[in-house]
Structures are given as structure tokens and as C-alpha cells.
Length: 304
Image (cartoon, rainbow, N blue to C red; front, side):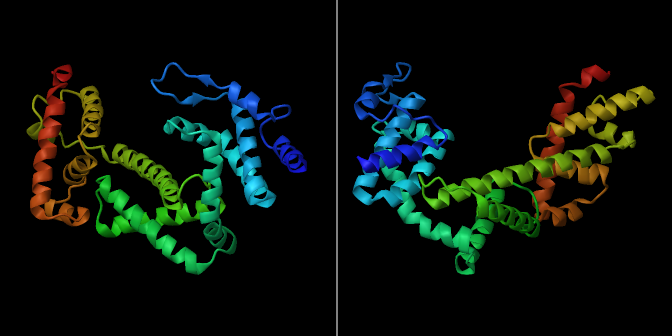
């Protein structure tokens, strides 16, 4: 009884109000079935779920001791506020709050010593292998997303992203309801998506800057029906051309058009820049031109 009162006091200072919700029979009788789903998954309201989690923590206290129960209680409630408990319950047909709390207990026992070395002690013996793993994951992620750059450029970006992810990891709150590797991989992936978005934004700004080309004779030889009659027409066509290039099917096609026709690089120079063979660059150039002609041909009638 004394243990239950202590744990109830702990839950009262956590983000959810649990006063008067300490009875397990009330919890069980208060669930409702979500008829929108063809399953037997319980759909818990917040107060009932919080009370069920409180009861489960008390079971942990009874079997494993109050210290560990007091440690995992705020973790469980923080995960509830972040939607992780609901995600667990919705994703497993036979899941229930007690199973979730025991899951947190098991992962805490498994990963807390490692997280302590990583976040508190910042031990090089643990950090160096982790940092190398982050770099390897980041490089492979860039490759899987067809990030067109030389191996050295990809390694540089992967190293930067691994360092940013490592910095975030130092102060990140591990939820202890999953293994460490999947969780830290998602953290790294979020960092990389932000980095790629930033790079793409800078790339588009660079495209807008360099596309002040007035060599319309060359463009007229490449694109059907393109003609320039006056300064106003040229301004409109420049904007249309920029838009057409932006619609190319891949970043690599955009890059080769910009490098070859706007920056004046030869295909051999582009091959070295992009880390590809000459034959691959010639095929990419051919595909990019065909793609650009189709895009332009679908809208050329606006500029007849």
C-alpha cells in the first residue's frame, strides 16, 4: 500500500493528471472498441491509458523494485505524450499497456549502460565505433538516394551529417521502447534529410543565378519551336527554360544540362566532376536532352 502511494505521488508530478484513476477495474472497464478498424485493438482514451500505465509500473515495482519503477515511470509518460505508446498499441493486435511498460523495462536494462557511456561519460571506446557506423550509414543512405556526387564529395557530406547526428545524440532522449540502432538510424536520417533539403535549396538558388544565358541560338538548335522575337519574349523564354530544366526527371539530368550548356563544361570535364565514366555521361546527356525536349514540346505552343 505504501509503495502504491509513493508511485501515485510520482505520477501526479508527471505531465498527465492521474488523481482518482488508480483503480485497475475502472481502467479495464473504460476501454472502447474502435469500430473503424477490422481488428480487436483497444482504443484507449488518454486518462484510462495513463492509469493503465501507472498500474503496470506498480507491477514492475512489486516484482523488480521501486528504484527501477521510479526510473522508467517518467520515460513511459514522456513516450505517452509523444505518441509512442499509442503507436505501439495500434501496431500490435494483442498489445496492452502492461506489455509496453515491461518492454520499456527490458530495453532500459539492455541499453542504459551503453547510453550512459555515450551520453554521460562520452567514452571514446564507445564513441569511435558509433561514429564510424554513423558515417557508413550516411554514405550508404546517400548512395541509395542516387545522390550524384563524387565519392569524395559523398564522404564529405556523410562525415558532416554523422557529426551533426552525433551532436544531437549527446542530448537526445532515448525512448527505451526499441533497440538502439533503429532509433539512432532514424535520428541520422532526419539530419540527412534536412541537410539534403538545404543543399537542394542552395542548388536551386545557384540555378537561378547562373541561368542568365542569352545564347539563344544554341538553345534554338536544341529545342523545337523556340524562337526569340524581342526582349520581353526573351525574358519569358528564360523563365520557361528555367522551369523546363527544373522539371527534368533527375538531379543528374539537371546537373549535366546546367554544367554543359550554361557553365560551358565539356562532357569529359563533367564526367570527372560527377565521378562517372565518359560513356555514362554521354548516355546521361542523351537522356537529359530527350527529357528536356519532351518537357519543352509539351508547352511550346505558349511561345509560338
